[in-house]
Image (cartoon, rainbow, N blue to C red):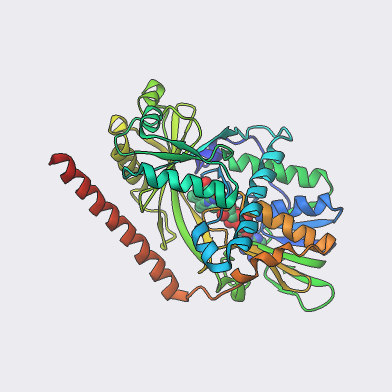
Length: 429
Ligand SMILES: Cc1cc2nc3c(=O)[nH]c(=O)nc-3n(C[C@H](O)[C@H](O)[C@H](O)COP(=O)(O)OP(=O)(O)OC[C@H]3O[C@@H](n4cnc5c(N)ncnc54)[C@H](O)[C@@H]3O)c2cc1C
């Protein structure tokens, strides 16, 4: 038996592998990619009585969708202030409303009674500098500009829930929540099949002819002919769709889960929702029973770092010295797709050809809206996807784009080191 790579694989509900496509097939919509973007799109199309075929080059949720932090919250990978500056207040508000709708879609689907999704609520973002006024102002800004009530937590409340001197005030997004993403993805796939959709695994799209009235997707042993194609490959690895691949770059990021910590966990964390700190190179984590799931770090090098367990262990101990030595049971890396504008690519490429990709590190709500917008555009001529036109397919800068992103990350880490040193000398003084 091959050892499970991720905590999610080790703890998922049982699911079985699917067949490869070995013949030609006709359908209304062909979806390429079996992550959340593809799965939500299929579900939304089926609700509108469209026949779907989904092809996945490996297995369902074998990309980012089965490996992520599982934090489902409003917003995008780009900050709301940058979105306001780019498209204006009304447009930005409409986008934010959609992002909240994405959270609602995920919540509704988990209520269908899928097993093992383990929903817990709340999402604290904790400040690492003492800034009561700043955090309160930010919470007020969300209420006033985006009609979203964030709960303000003073330092005492934060330190009661999170036993570390590193954190000060926080904002809690109460309607955010956490899921077991791999279980949710498999539950969605089963639901798609139960409703008559076809899913083929081990079936890479090799290329596609999207110019005719009927689009054709070629796979190693069969073709899919469809009225519409939706490209949901995240960042499209390999050489199948070079034009799309040029607009997104893959960025690796890391997660790990500790061994059971027993009663020790309550010495550190007494909040069972999602937690993120506001360091430049931030940490995000949560309890899972008496373990901690901890995420941090990015790299343009997609190879799993050799000392990932040690890095995560050190990060945990830096925030919670009382957990020094907590062993990491499994650690893994996953790849996010980033566009240069840090917003997802959602919309029409040409009549009958659609894209839902580049969700970055904020894909759990945004993939759900991508599915909804594309399905309602196909079935009902809804044109809300046009809200994403300002964030179209832009060349991601090739080698230079990646180098820029890596240097940007290193400079964030450096700023954290300088801040830490400043804090230490302040304390000593
Ligand atoms: C470690 C990690 C932590 C994260 N944490 C969070 C979080 O807490 N909250 C959050 O909102 N987001 C998070 N994200 C981001 C989120 O997981 C992604 O944005 C989201 O899963 C993207 O979904 P997707 O369907 O676009 O991509 P994927 O899940 O990568 O799916 C794309 C699929 O397309 C397939 N594919 C590609 N090319 C082809 C082809 N030619 N033919 C057929 N199939 C193809 C791939 O095999 C893959 O399965 C995290 C990501 C990572 C990696």
